[in-house]
Image 1 (cartoon, rainbow, N blue to C red):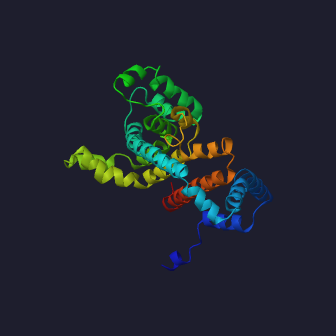
Image 2 (cartoon, helix red, strand yellow):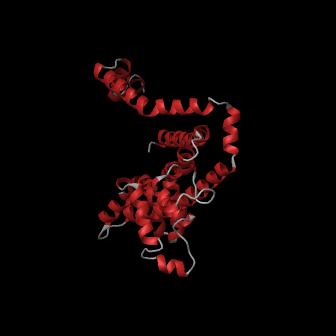
Image 3 (cartoon, rainbow, N blue to C red):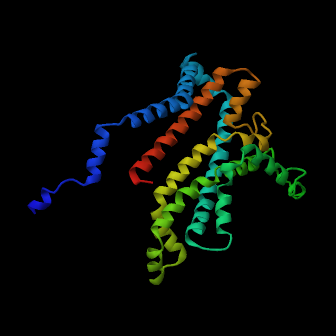
Length: 287
């Protein structure tokens, strides 16, 4: 017992302590470059936006956010983003299960298609949706005959937002499913548990943290989407105008920078909250 108590600490712990106590010149240089890079590209614009938002006074910010068009834009953003998050959560888990648990022809191609929104410009996504669901698109005449409007309406905006945020849930859940394996599910199946029961009692608890992480990132991505939604929504004020589009309209059409800063501030606070939540999840569960 005495030998165990007096055993030296692991070498990895000792090396970590030494590296923290005595930073090298190379590490200090990399830290300086990283801080400058992040400071110039991220922190400085954020500080300026906070300053310009509150420069006219808190009352001006509140009045700008109470303006009917601004409130409607937030409502449209919440509906579109919320719908896209639900769609990507359901189908994201399904695609993640398919990629992690099954081997089939075209699996790698499907995995590549999941990452396609990262490589494709959102403007291209919006244009593609117009070509498919627009009045002269592939399904346009059919939709028109059945009085279903996709383009210049919320359904098209939801499709565009869901497309650009598609990979986030999938890529958060797939590694966890691959690490978990099939042992528990196979044991439950051998005891007579149905597929839905195995999914509810084994799969969901195993991916709960990773799924939450993916959903948080999806929310942040959906709220800030601009390019794809701009193309499919026609940017109709008071109808299909989202918060990011409202900011652009205030700057370009009305030259109302104070109101634009106020809306930007709200979107930034939501993004910061999502970042803090995702960072807490990663630190707590080691994602």
